[in-house]
Structure formats: C-alpha cells, structure tokens
Image (cartoon, rainbow, N blue to C red; front, top):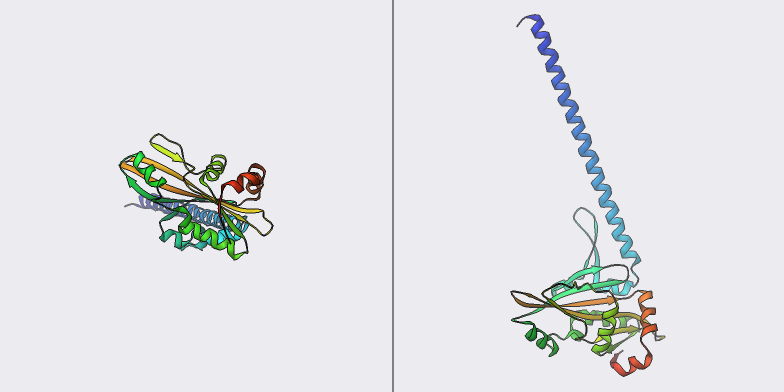
Length: 241
C-alpha cells in the first residue's frame, strides 16, 4: 500500500470509527433520556396513586377493603384486601368515593335456571365477606347498619353508576338482594352497599355478583333527598348495632 492509499485508508477508518462513536453516544443519550422519562412517569404514577389513597372520602372503608402496597420497583399500587382476594373477589374499579367488586358465583345451563338459583338463595350476599367487612367497620365507629329490602337495592342501583356493561348475551339484574346502609350517631347516611348481578351466556351461563360501595358526600345527600323516611321504614328488614 503506497503512502497516499494509506493516508486515505486511515482517514476513512477514523471517520468510520468517529461516526460509530457518535452513534453510540447518541444511542446512550437516547436510552438515558428514555430511562429518565420512564422513571419520571413511574414517579408521577406512584405519587398520583398515593394522592388517590390519601384523598379517598372514607378512610375506614378504604382500609377495610383496600391496601396500599409497593411493586418491586417501588411504585405505589392500590389493591384489594388479600382476605377478599382469597374469597374470590376482584377489584373491578375504584375512585375517591366508590369501590366496585366482582365475584364469579355459579355456572348453569340456561338463564332461567341461573336466575332461579339466585332468587332461591344460592348465594346469600348479606352473609358474605364483603358484607361482614362493611358491618365491621361501621360498628367499630359506633355506627349502625340498616338492611333494606331488595326493592330499595334496585331503586338505588338503577340511579347510581354501575360497572356492569350492557351487551348482547348478558342479562343484568339490580334487585335480587337486600341493601346495606351505614348511618352515624346522628342518623345521617355514611355509606351504601348494593349488589347487582350479571348472567352471561358463553359455554352455559355464568353468573357474577357485583358489590357496589358508595361513600361520597354528594351520593349521601342524593340518597337523603330521594328516599323518604316512610319508604325506608316500610322496607326495613333489620338494624345491626
């Protein structure tokens, strides 16, 4: 190789290596930026989750049904109480003033049989774990829980948000079960627990019960303004103190 060729080769090699170094530096910078972005996003999500937890309207119900935990990378997560998880409940949705749970209950060959079994008490919601926890937290505060007939449950469910989705092949029922309402020492409503059912046709017919826990002040005012004392007295099943 003559001197001229060597100089050209050396120059090209240098440019190539320099270009590779620039590309690697750019890649490292990009990956570093992405990593910082992910960390910032994770931190933002974690702080947002903490804020939701801190600002939930009823800490007593929150602490009975939910837990605040951290993932292995340190991100805050709001999860369902492990006792409920072990009892086959799932956390369907939650926000500052409501908690929605879902539980698979039974499988039948058709809608009529599924609904018949539900009406006949194949699953007694007023004695399940969700009801037990709801009552426990109320009594611990010196409150009482009044259980009203299924007609009240239906009236409330028809007017408050549900997580059940309407679609072909599903039957929804909002009035199979009694409703629990927590009252404080002054007789003011504090929280409401309703139940809803969805039966879905797939391989056979599967039924799920939805537990809806409402505890926002606006919902309690709505309840007081729309349900008269006489109506509630006439539909009262029992008071738990």
